[in-house]
Length: 327
Image 1: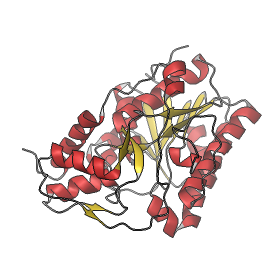
Image 2: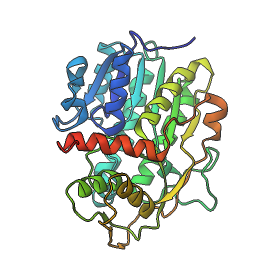
Image 3: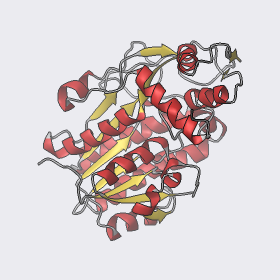
Image 4: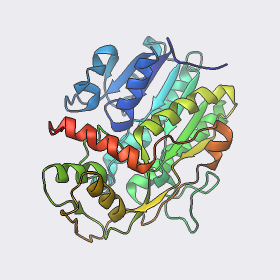
């Protein structure tokens, strides 16, 4: 049976984050009844500044508190769960691994266990994993049949969350599917340590952009609106296409270095004179990552709608508006 989400009761963890805020927007357009789990109120985030929070039910609490999650699912009679909430900054995970493990691992099994306890309510669950869950691979691009072997704190936390989701799907026959995306970018990302928002902010202020690595790290970049489309497609497909327990890579399948994406942003913003400063720090990050999205193409008929130029142009426009520097 197809799901258009009108009237569906949807719980979103991480609703104030980059993907969460845009997912909230899309589900509100579809007239879903959105319930957001929110740990901290931050009025700078898109979820608040857009006013979308006024159209949602907000449950205040953290992923580490099982009773809060259990209550939210039960009292709001949730039928769809998008679990996006996590500590997502690689550098922060390196500095504070315990907090990362608490939110990303404990938080995930709390969500899964609460859904298991309320299987009479919950009809579909989408769990956000990451390309980082694969760790360093001998062969690229990553495909979904590759082992998960993260070795640094953030990577390990995503490997664990991914495996937990698979365990609950296969052991308890729960309607769970898993997303593995590359580097997600788009308006609303206020984590300035990330290369796209950090570079845009620097250039808007006529400052030299900073690259912490040697600039040669290879990544997949995917626009947030394509990611939201992927999440909704996957949620619709869990029961319709009998894909419970499956994981899917979502990617534009375009490999690009950090220095290349900085240069693309400089060109879009007409700031070629501001050449980046390369710090060449020894970062505890995976040097090269790329994803195959062939499984999503074949099983979900999902394809990205945005190439890098179009996605970055929209992103730049969002930040110009955010900083009051629109033309």
